[in-house]
Image (cartoon, rainbow over all chains, first blue to last red; front, side):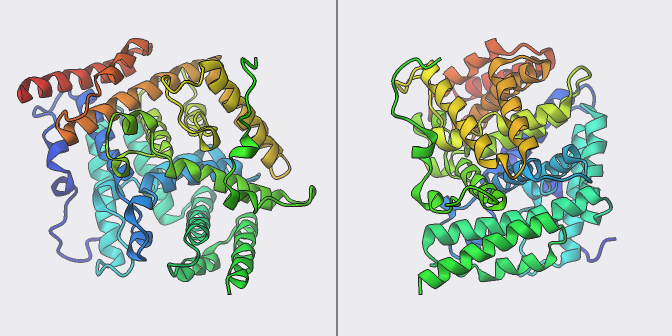
Length: 220
Length: 220
């Protein structure tokens, strides 16, 4: 799977302040390791989503990676569906970007290939799963399973969460445009509509696009 | 239940930018109302947790309300437990502060009584449930049910999430202290340890307090 020689490693990306909390013995360290995991998850609170920052939005006003995953979870609960396991969808949404805690939110134009981005995320999930394995082996396996499910889109739940990931981003683009009066060009984000498969998510997305079109007309 | 005459209402707290998206007819407006709900939920991304801001932490570095709920969801998945329904715990955690989108994060020292704070949150949950009822009556009822469960601590799941709410805050206080080198006095937040009932959450919390005590000693 390794597409290129890379110096990047999850261990090397753990901030020094967190690294020094790692237990320095290897057994009976469940709670300490769990706390390190929890503190790594906190990096999702302080990292802003790159797509918005790179379009010039003021960083202090931009959502965090965890803000995005939070609202995906709520939207997944809100949507009326019959054929997917909602509880599993919610858990996938909370886990799907968890590797970004250490990898960061790498945009397509970063120079890092899609394969290398995927590799970094995969080894980070393995690293995080190792870290919590003694504390809770069941969750270590579940986290990796939920993540792989999403990455490989191997269940209807993963497919559904993929659609919500796009929709939540489009809705956020629209909110930033409302707040900043089209000062920043966020048009390209709406192209993700094309990748949305589920009719009810497409319906919401089309209503957003309708509202936005009216807004742009009114601002001409 | 109304403890005092109050002018506060959820309708009056919806920002004008969102209010104008409300459907102006009363039927077949499910998707539009759902989008208004989703945009109200977004206010949880932009509101910083009051406890930290009021202690002087730089607002731009302070977690949002949704950041807090996100990590609670992940911690709930991480903890090894046998006797609670984890999926329900996760959903309670995502909903428990959702009324703060309109009510705000009111601290105990704000001058608003506990009863009035509860009343505002209750009427906001009713308002939000009304808003999405046509779109998804099942979730409208579920959201209100999960919120009431938490507020009244009527199930083991709600009890568990209450403990995690306290623990997540204590862990966050500790992270801010690590980052800012005890510049801000966050001691009082650790008192919430006394309210934690579940042994495994208490264990994690005690490890945090042990780490913090060593940190304070080292900084003397």
